[in-house]
Length: 97
Image 1 (cartoon, one colour):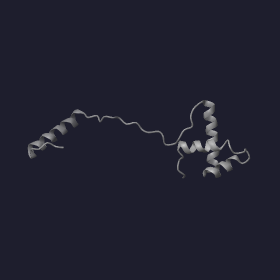
Image 2 (cartoon, helix red, strand yellow; image 1 turned 90 degrees about the horizontal axis):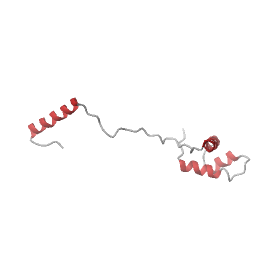
Image 3 (cartoon, rainbow, N blue to C red; image 1 turned 60 degrees about the vertical axis):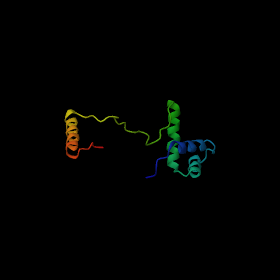
Image 4 (cartoon, helix red, strand yellow; image 1 turned 180 degrees about the horizontal axis):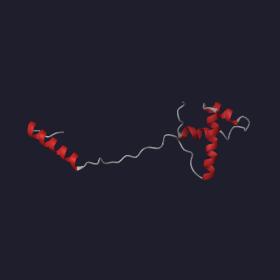
């Protein structure tokens, strides 16, 4: 399976497409940019739909899962941590790092 093209590569393909004459447009754009003809057709269709709806064309792989910035610690975990620190200090007479 080929790698997903980033937005800058997609923009190059979309800029090359209007310059070339309409006969065998997808063939020539595919040859000029080094991607498949089917991908060029799909990208041009996606661009037309984006223009109609007023949105941007999407780049795959941009969705990222948001994580919480904090770790939730309940009273049990807090007590275990506290006992371990006290145990370490009582045995080794050092503070844990």
